[in-house]
Length: 71
Image (cartoon, rainbow, N blue to C red; front, side, top):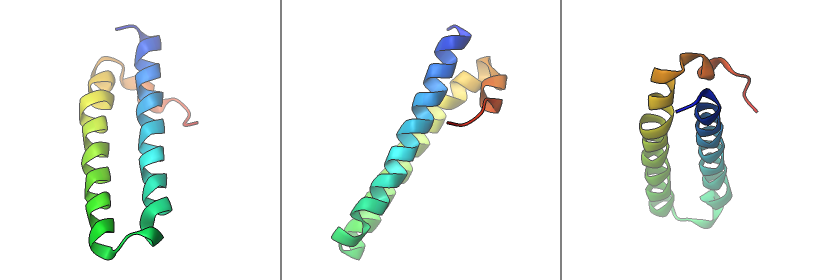
């Protein structure tokens, strides 16, 4: 993998994480507490998969990518 590809993966992972967090804010008022807890759990698990499955492998190869400015 090239450094440019690593940067794209890192940026996309961050963007996906931000979108998932925003989703929780958007649906909070439209869900019961139980439903919201289910959404929250799904978001948390998905963010964990993004971090461990995409971002962490990139950082093993290109640790400096984590130091890039956040968009």
